[in-house]
Length: 109
Picture 1 (cartoon, rainbow, N blue to C red):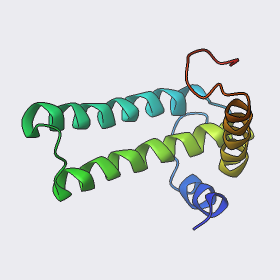
Picture 2: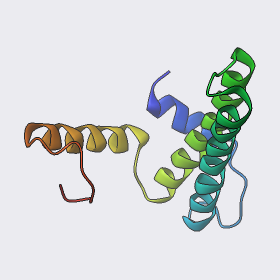
Picture 3: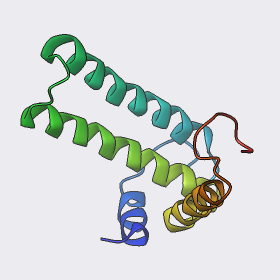
């Protein structure tokens, strides 16, 4: 499946207020679901000494899918394709790598 196919199919399941003119709803959903991923990882550290079972991996993958869904919707609300977002990210990382700036902090490295 391509990002384009995913974004098209995911968009068919979107039901929220002012869809098509509401970037706030998917932004809030995105951070909420990212928090759920972090919580599951935290509990693996606490309860399983950092060892991820197949069951936990499956649970985390489902939460990651929710992150992807909200990212897809936020992209759509901003008039961006997921493919465009992914390409821009790889381009940014390549430039940082070429300049030896992959590590460190700040947006403009």
